[in-house]
Length: 220
View (tube, one colour):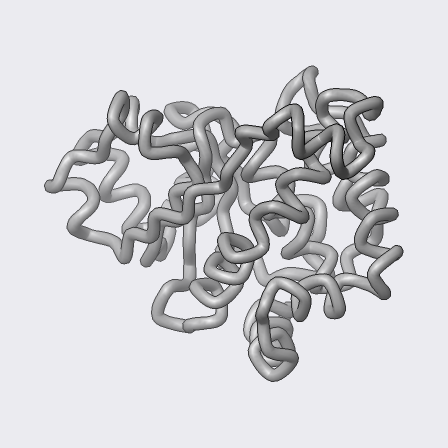
């Protein structure tokens, strides 16, 4: 069975499961980073084998402790992968939004802003995980595979110099709730800081780490 058939089988089970390269094959290697909703409801020996056949080595779980408490991986499934829990905080306290002057933005723009600027430690962790070759290929997921996963996916694609329309195309492929203007907002906020490299450095990442990651993820 080839990778396309395998991917189709997984997509028949797990919502929003797709190769991050699907709209960006000139910018990121295929079969190296997958974005997804939570695979937990679909755990089975069959899905486990399909993940293995796709070459998946690690899982990055962006959910909260409460979400994990309600829906957890089975040991027989999870023990086959390098598992990383990186909780992306989406609490968005009203006093913070008011203090930062973004309370008048739309909900999703508030979400994007808060994710970018109040999750820098978590974003650093995700990029450091991806920088280690033993973790690739990897699946990045939250609950629905839309918002938290969408922001992280956009940052990865920006690092690889993918064009904004391609990144938007990937984001819009998720569901009817995604809007291209949210990616435009992310790009604008990062541009204000001098670009994606400067933003990721502000998260605590080393330029050498980012350069190595670009080399590792870019198509051969």
